[in-house]
Image 1 (cartoon, rainbow over the protein chains, first blue to last red):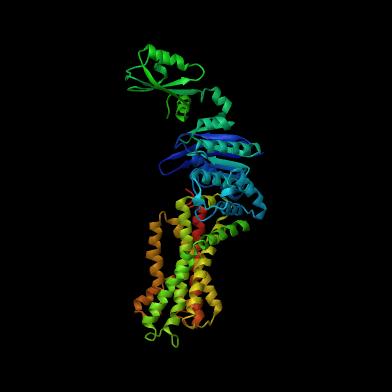
Image 2 (cartoon, chains in turn brown, blue):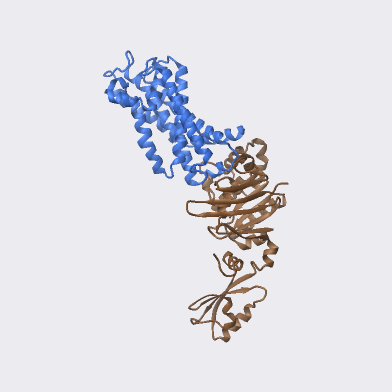
Length: 307
Length: 253
């Protein structure tokens, strides 16, 4: 049986930029797949190629075995894409938008029940008659998700669906996306949020500058230490010139009275670090911790030498 | 084939201009009527272009076709550029619609708007002046083919333009002068020889001349030749638009 998405030797060049450099990987059917990477890594370019929105120079891409170039119509019938940019047609209401999108895929009245189900699942029923212009950003994002799902695609690609979305809506979207996955959809999620990928994805690919920096199961990536790090940010009463020698390898930033250290969740104790700084004469006035972000992941993946 | 998909896009394009009827149908009809009233008031009784045809009657088919041309072009071009600039064109590009289905839906919707405006101008004009109908088949053939030509040209302009300013340039420096200088207000026989010669390079001239033949049975050029010119223009523009859609020119980067 063919993979949900198969990418073989994919190259994409813009005039001077080699955006994708010979990518080879596949997303299996029924998987919850995470595609991570910093800005400019090539995530959206890759998603757009799979969706048929961007052309490519070399290689082959298939969706459920359908070539996205030679059999683009078949490929597009089985994939639903939620674009990253918040866009909408200001001429139409929510229900009209969904009926029109459904019609593009050759579906008529027989799809009405599914449209109503989508409206309900995405909490849009009471806004179904409202013009798109009248919706909040979060609601527009939900309509875009409904548009991507209106033809019941087997493969669903969500390009940063939670970017700029408040915490409550993000949680609702997570619940909805998990439900889609449970119902058998293959999900490909691109995100900036490591936390999001960790919470949802079974397998994760990390793109950096158009190349695969990592591709493994979430468990294996975590076992390699990816995502195990956290940052400790401290403010001291007086500017510090240096940290104790034992903390020097963990130091990320020291500017005046701002100190930033990278700690291993499992082996480094925050209390021990604070005690070491106090013993060094520092008076700590503020303290916060942050989860590892993608930059940390890259530092880990590239042994401290992010490209 | 995806007939439901094609029909949906066509319907959506019609719905789009139907939601702003004041701007897309009523305003151009009023503009054409103002031309009719002003020119008829100034020139009626002083000019006779075709023997036995009053100037106001001569003017009406020209104004109808000018409205058809401008509105068919405006429909496809504005729809595409708006969708491109707001980004919602992506929801069409993600679908399994073929290049031909996309083309036909946009062009036929543009043609429908052009023909509705033309019909509106004609229907209101007949209250002011009696206009004979000699060859209805020619009238229908020219109005449909001409609006389709302009629908296709509008698609090309809408795909090519990257901002509204470029589209306005296309409209103001190509469509408007060509439609005004195509014999809407005069017969090319009344022009100096050089202008008569230049007019023959203007495809809009053939549209208007052939269309007018359908009403009066008189034309500057043989209507069958004009029909061939319009058909050739449609063939060339169709091929160009389909090539643009196939290669993804300025649509798929």
